Image 1 (cartoon, rainbow, N blue to C red):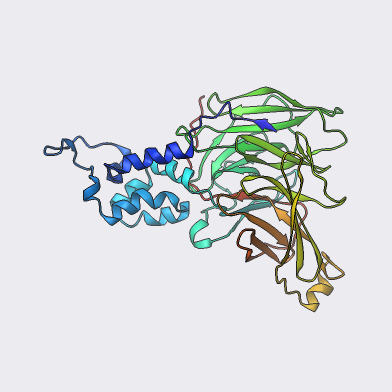
Image 2: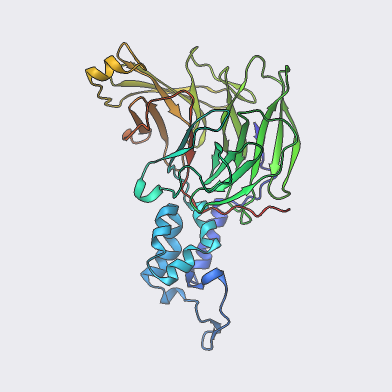
Length: 405
């Protein structure tokens, strides 16, 4: 696990909330104009800018702009630009982008792509709500070359080109290319994007690459900082990974970077005591890092095993009925179904407020809410392919820090 807490500007959520509420006591978001400039016209009676509105003069639309819009997904906000010029000016303002990226943290969908070395497969997007969480270009064709999606963090994506990494916002189509790294990361690198919008008004981000030494059970970490626009080798090393390899598509959570390995470890190093031959995914459950596996014993019954804590022990198991209706023809023709059981896997997930486990089968994707024991069902995008990687995504207006030349 590689900590970034010393490198990230942080502010507590309570402090941030107090600042926002204190600001709302006097002024409405009518302060935003095109390009977020400030008019020089003053109200002679109040001695305040004429576009400022006191709390007692605020209308419902002003309250909605200030206290509702930051909690909506990015696609919905883009639609609301047509409401009025005032709303349009506020929605395109960087201040709202910052507030929305810190306030809206729900799972919006998954980018998925077949992992190959020659970049022949374009990414696609599976939305959990097409009306609210869509993106304009699911294949990310606005980037200058074909890419492979590696990681996601708070609305930003990390993509790998032939020789470069790209960080982009798929909703706004904003992107930046990072400079070349010093060490060889491999054709399917174990690199994660670390972006925490809380208190990060400059939108700084980091890339953390776990780089194994050839023929040695040692992994070191090369870190990119957008603030300095440079790569550096971390002093941290992992010395406990023997006869194993890192699995790409790691997880960033609360200032820490995590990866799974082929021997069911979480670098560095938490061994997960799961049965042989069973694999799962890193996810966030009950606001802590967890490793979740799923198994379909028979029919509609699926068993979830959730591992967590400092020793990654089995916290609890959940037996759920997903109502997976399989026709006789499906059972006979589907090569992934054996003796009436369904091949299934857990998809990685970052939860904010909702404790969700996402299960993917040959026919459907299920969102299972642990607290409410509720199930939502979506169609699987094609047959379940072990080489297809799913990257969780949050529909955000998050800006990308301008990189120094």
